[in-house]
Length: 130
Ligand SMILES: [Zn+2]
Ligand SMILES: [Zn+2]
Ligand SMILES: [Zn+2]
Image 1 (cartoon, rainbow, N blue to C red):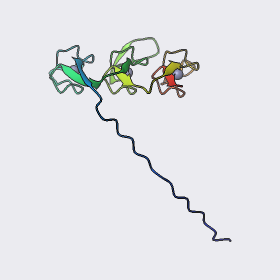
Image 2 (tube, rainbow, N blue to C red):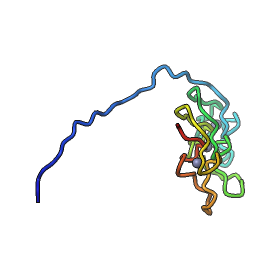
Image 3 (cartoon, rainbow, N blue to C red):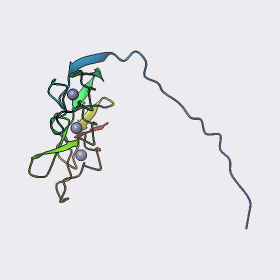
Image 4 (cartoon, protein in one colour):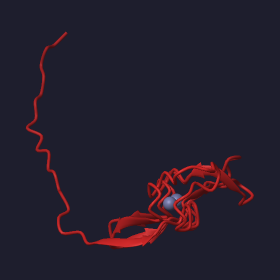
């Protein structure tokens, strides 16, 4: 067996986004109450009970949870789970410019799946970077 090994000088470019303005907004998961809606009495896991969260400017509403931060099942019923796409914040950061995801028509969901899992093309965001 040949031991020829090609080593490429892979440059790992780390792009840190500096100077991203953070926006304070009401926590959508608990609607600003600071309490986990399903585990009372319990502190909201998203905002740590403060009722507000900081999100980077330029975020989009999370298509998968309709911007609620809460996981919905196929019928649109709320489940006591945080949205796996946005982590419960209700918004996601995307690299502009974007276009509506053709695979899910912007819904962020894979409707052919019984559990309406996040669309694999856009990861549930509903848009893809172009
Ligand atoms: Zn909260
Ligand atoms: Zn979400
Ligand atoms: Zn999609």
